[in-house]
Image (cartoon, rainbow, N blue to C red):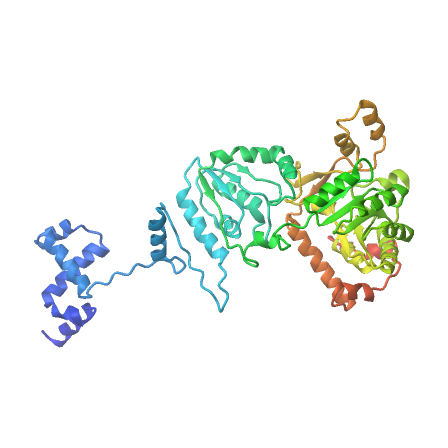
Length: 514
């Protein structure tokens, strides 16, 4: 054997142990291993080819492994942990189990939902069969999974939980259901309602809505369910972060009127654990409101009392002296409100907030700006005028999370129906149990729109999207004012008078002016 042959033999061997085999044995073992491991031939086929028994083929293959002539490497994508996956499957008797590695960078050991979602999308494509009913619960990984789906057999897709948007690329569980149904070509049954609700009565009312009830009918028919279970820790669990106080409850404010047994209702709400109690009526500066505040204050509530609505300093003074902690400001600015057109009563919102906030400060109290918010600028102006909070209604009505069924117009645009609480529609709902005379009498006092379409902005269809936009506007306002806090923003704000022409000048142009 010359030197070149020696080099060839050495090249074929994977280690010194393999050199203990003779040259012919090495060549034969290498050939058999190639047939078996690379070409997929059976031991019987190999035995027939080389003129030996299948038992000898088995011994040669075993020797090739022992002497390092053949190395078997099981290579799976770096993000999959095959060993743990198999151990998990065996431990719990699962049909399938896939463990996904989430390489930590530095000390951050948080999981990577996007990476997990991509693997889950591939797994779901394997598991779902034609005709299945696929249920999707909320979860960041679930949403990323839906975004990564590129194949899915025809199936019906139903949402298993209410809406919660945590700022993912795909907008929440509703969009996850829509995406999965789009890929599969099947029906979609989303749930247009929040994941967490303040009480069982609200949940029961939402369940009775047509679209939600239809989704619930599919729950018993679900054949494949995709759920996400995470850690119950701050900063990791998005549901945990939705809760605010030490008991893990949501902060809840509830309102009573100034007629009927409002004191009894207020006591029930306080006993139920509300965090803020609102005494609410359209015209807050009246004797009945003052008497109502005093009566509720006599219950010695350990939570703030909010009262309104008013638009003048005198009203602020009287309601605070009666026992209110926070004054709600605004008569007529709301998008659903027709008070100013029906009665001529009201006041421009900025002027009202500016005057009322200045008066409330004298008593160490606060005001909320209620109504008229259509753009981020309106929030910034209310805060600049001295409001400690800004209430938003109609703007948020055009979102996935608002109550009501999602509808489509003739052009396919999504919208929610909204109506004022003093409208004929609302009055009819409230007085349905009263006599015909009382219903007719109360129907005369209509100060609100009975139906209005609040279209969802395709780029900002969720509440969080709008909040992000508002915060961006307010932050920019603070930057322009040179303010590092909202208190400093109010202090540095300069109030002037702007003409209609000046306001029009500041509006963006979406087309050329020529």
